[in-house]
Image 1: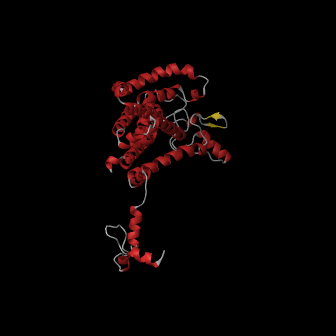
Image 2 (image 1 turned 60 degrees about the horizontal axis):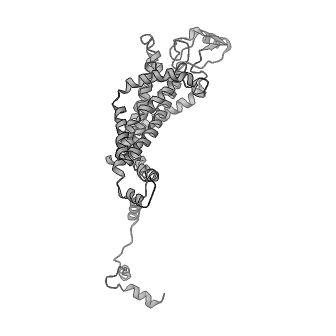
Length: 364
């Protein structure tokens, strides 16, 4: 570019948006300071919905404490079976002989045969951390397996509720009209039924009918009570999720970007997956997180009534049920699973509340 053209650029034309470089040379434009540059970087930092929610979640001390507690519990139920040399159904024996004196021992106690064995051989026997139950089984490993079963039931049930409720609520909310009317009347009928009574009745009926069908299959190891419990959760507990998803979709489906997607011929399934459901993510996360403790509590309640997992497999509710007979003589056997249930459910509830505060846009 020639020198004359450069001089022409310096002269700002009338009504032109061109910057007058002569003013810059006179000092009217000052360079940004380091602090202003740093502030601009912070203001211009890009983020996503998930990153923004996690940032708010990390500022919640109760939610972070709950995460730490849950991580410790999960690590314990994963590592403990590899460290403790007992099984949840194993009756204590010494040199292949059943130890009848090992029943109803207190924490860190040894039976007479175990004490004699250690004195004669000089070898150490792994301690019974929570003692033993009435049949002489290590109570600590039974509590570990009980917590594993209870957490597994809660997670599987919440996933089932999420899948069924998400599909059902999405179809009802998106298509509306007669489809929505019929589908939501079905939801209202199920929602009006007494939950616990129906759960108990279905568990009893399904337990009797599933037993011949599961014989000889890999599912037989879980037991008919466990399978019937999953079926009950899948039949009843999805209605709240479906109603929430439907309500969210009704408020979102008439937005401009959804109408634009329809105008260009986008299929309904793609609109739901790419445009509508991502905007329902906060409701999905919160409801699923709060469904886990509800399922754990229901499983514990059913197991306490004898309708839960089948013996010899155990859960925290069945452990509490077994401890009722010796509640006055051995109260620790009832206190330990009760405390474990309270700790898990409380931590999950606090985590669910923290997720609601972090991801619910209406609260921020």
